[in-house]
Length: 329
Image 1 (cartoon, one colour):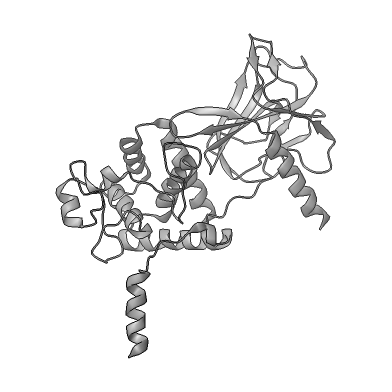
Image 2 (tube, rainbow, N blue to C red; image 1 turned 60 degrees about the horizontal axis):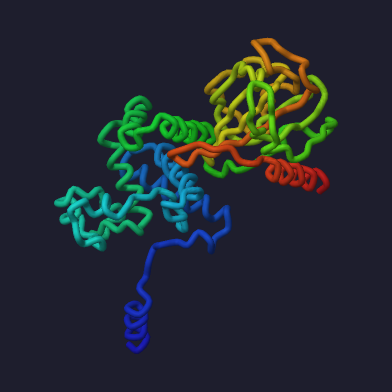
């Protein structure tokens, strides 16, 4: 009896919560719990788990770089502002009653069956997202329309569809492996050239790192991603653009040529050969030889509103070091 009384007292003092602090878990555990949430929501709503995961991952990626959004601290990344959750005319921002939330045209829904629509509960958030998608349907075209109506931005729709394609193809979400763009065994050199001045075609800064290597040295994808761009540019010559799951765009330029059958929309993974080192660019299509052969590698971040370049050099050093350490084991 005393044990029961103590348990009741502790429950009131330290109320149970299903909020999981992601910082307390290993990365493997985070992926497992995240996938479990996606699968449970799919079972309840018939919305494909990779649709939910694609949106959830996009929201997580922009929250990590936006100052106007709270940083993700839970298993899920999907975020809904409080005014949208409880309803624009609802003065009770702590409202978790599905009836009053619905009355005020709030979007919040009860996903775990406890009779409450709580914005802090992962199940409620994903269930609310699934309910929105279900209004449109689950075929790809209708899903794209749902995304457009929600975000009103083509690049965001394409970014989420990139996530969806990757999750659907590999049937898992732990796709964070990285590789250096030049395979081991080939001679190359590079230094930090991001931000250096460039003069051809007008004054501009160098938005990348130049990795010097011989003609024809293979160039490979660093990440799991989708080919978003392939073709000629008067500055970059023959180039390829790949978007990854973190909504980072990887730019490979001055190529000597492309891998056979590589096309826009292709799914690639770390190590996929996409082309070879060359010296193309600085003129009309086919121009080559105006500078020593090298790979120009750039990285661009999209935060859901704007896109900017950032220095890839520290990441290249990290990926290079990780590969060497792995090979030495």
